[in-house]
Length: 157
Image (cartoon, rainbow, N blue to C red; front, side, top):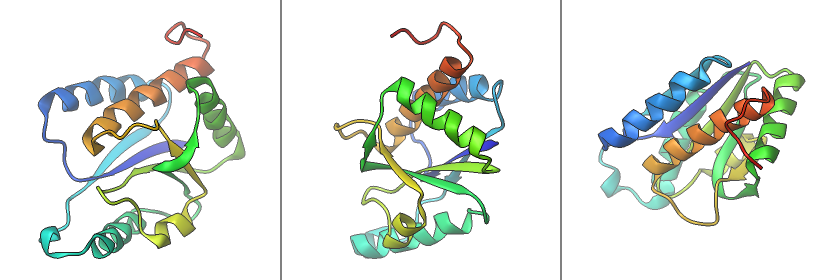
């Protein structure tokens, strides 16, 4: 199974890029992984929030293939401990989707079409983080979950 993280907009801070690359380098030792950044929408300031969500949603849907399992990182999603996230990953690995796609949306969330297409929503916290910080936090949690599944000493209960 390949895991893909889709994110809207580039990362502006080099320290976040460095941290993300650190975890990507670790993740690829466990399984195929790809971070795909979808460019920000042009002239988005002239769009309403709903229009922006719609356009971002279309760009995200274009990245999906038939059979992809889609998980939205959404503030209204289910909150999981790191150990429970590792169990979720293990179940996905055993159930056989070719690609497991996690999505970090734009600042206003997701379009209705993405909510309909998604198999699951998870939340990383009740707190709000910048979309750029969420990338690093998610990558660390993905690495943590994979190390839990391998019984490695990275995670401590």
